[in-house]
Image (cartoon, rainbow, N blue to C red; front, side, top):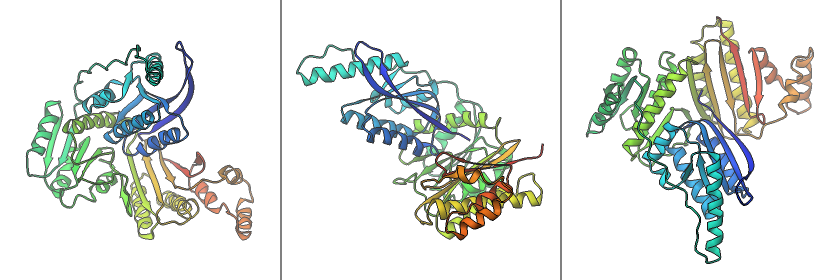
Length: 425
């Protein structure tokens, strides 16, 4: 699974004048799935009054257009508050995306942390000089030189695009110029009929093509194509974070109108990611649903369909589905307090050794360590029933998930449960 890890470090710049700032270490992918986490982390910093920020991007392997928009937004917020917002140690492929979209003309980029601290110091002295009506003598941060464009990865791309205009032909030609194989379709049935023979690494779907709404679900449900990256092109005005009812998530997305260069960079980055993921995983599916019963049923039905394809016996598949149902039920009733507007997110990942299901709610979490510490005890069942009689959270659901899986743990504050089952060798 493409994750994003974020850690914070409060530092004092080692320049001529002591200067405190927050260093934000980023590692992984800033894509459609991880952007909300990225956004929340920066919002907390800005809202807490920390407006001197340096984003250490050395570990960022990919950033999408939404992530870049977020960088510009938080840069402006810090600047309006009299602070500074810099990027440092940006990887080559990420830097190309930023250059193509003009980010580096707005946000300062430092080659390392030492230079970032010099930029912070320069910005601070320039601000003081301006306030005192003096002429600033400090050096402004230099522009980042344009990076040369690397050779694109070889691979196959299936594209479902409207037949009108030249857009589809341009996309096909671009992929082929970069060493890949491009297959162009103008209707859903044609794509579904040809996908097995193509076995694409990437599928680009324009949602303006009729009957394409359920295409992501069909692709992700097929183990052979589940690791293929899906990029959705949404119509103008679409909200990429909108989940009404039930949704199987694409790997990344663009909203029309967009810069063609952004699509091409996104395509090549996703193909590189798929190449890495195929070495580690056999299937990845992320789906999300609201607290309405119809939406919950759709989520559980998809989970059951995914589990049915695992190399397990009937009893093991039934037990694993029971664990998933219990995890979802706990998330809906306890985590989200049965609120229909709150969402449950399921990340389903299969590798050669195990299947992992992460069920996340939007609640405040709970004292999961207390309940996990008691599930191994002989009287765990009786004690859980007693707690329920007293009106508390019994823990029977946790006990059930534990007995139906090989590993059970709660992450963070307790609003994410990890259910794991070993697969036969």
